[in-house]
Amino acid sequence: MRGKVAIVGYGRTPYSRVKPGEPVLTVDEYIAWAADLALQRAGMSKNDFDGQGLAVAHAEAAHTVNWSASVAETLGISPKVLLRADQGGASAAALLIRAAAVIDAGIVDRVLVVGADTPLTIPSVAPGLPLSPERSRGPYWDFQGPFGVMGATAQFALIQRRYQHEYELTDEQLAKIAVVTRYHASLNPGAIYRKPITVEDYLNSRVLSAPLRLFDCVPIVNGGLAYIVTSAKSARTITDRPAYLLGFGEVNNYYHGSRTRPDVTYTGFVKAAPEAFRMAGVEHKDIDLFQPYDDYPFIVVMQIEDCGFCKKGQGGRFVQERNLRFDGDFPLSTDGGQLSGGQPGGAIGGFAPLIEAVTQLRGEAGERQVKDVSITLSLGFGGIPYGRPGRSCAAIILGSEG
Image 1 (cartoon, rainbow, N blue to C red):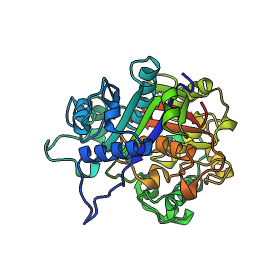
Image 2 (cartoon, rainbow, N blue to C red):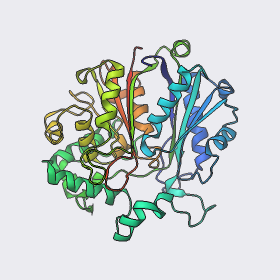
Image 3 (tube, one colour):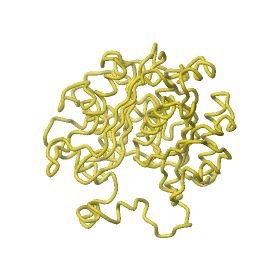
Image 4 (tube, one colour):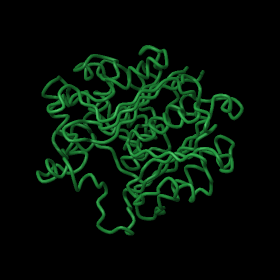
């Protein structure tokens, strides 16, 4: 499937922390806004998607079993194919893979992919409904909830603690990731936190769930994102700067080692990333930009290792020795990532790494533009199953040439 489809447009609404005076929009309004921005950038209209494809990422605010069809109604289009992903932060990448498949099969020629959420203002139409049904049943409620492990930060704190027990990873190395992403955010008008921070600021930030600090944690926002994927043939008639899908890999519910006692210091990227590299026919040295799923700095370290840029346990040293800035030898999270850019809900945050990769390949990143970028690796990472990081892992390699 290498080079058979391409992304031809994208859109990202301004993010909101719902501060006093800011307009409060619904999830439907954010979806429509993001879709319109993507259509404008591609020079297309919603009518171009009648009889084509619509892909929708699940949202916490979407308390309906007909979410994708409801979104089609909101947008006023009549698609032939509806796709939906509920893989958390891997949803955007997974939908690109699904869209590529239906286009390659000749079912449709183009797919509009949208995602939005309003986690800071979940509507009151369903009072008392938990944000995630999984938190009211199964392993989470049986083994974690009763003991106070509430929310992603507490869950990831346990994983980081185990990683640091097994391998060397210093606070200063983690601080470098937080500082660099904030620097990139300072160059991105759309980032939610743009004031630069220092290593000392990171080290002095308060502990929220040991060992995770305030500046380890992703800020939650309201917002929406979208992108358009078409056949390579159509892409060349729509834009002179398509971002071609070169390779992908995906793993769900991955166990490293025993299912009864898996090694939690590994993610599914140890399987997904090699698949993407093989399909794309590229090597690690060919990657010009790395866009991890960066909701916590230590997860970035694990992704660097599991994608094969260094051996397990050497990610901290790798970060320490490389220049992670947009003009360095290993640029990452050049939009500020989710750490400083913001995350519009756990299911929608995965759009950001992918869309920044496209932005860079099109040469539209402004002050943070990576020089001569032609191949990117972006990751989607979703869910925290009991005792393991990342229920869904998807790796996407894009290129400026098909």
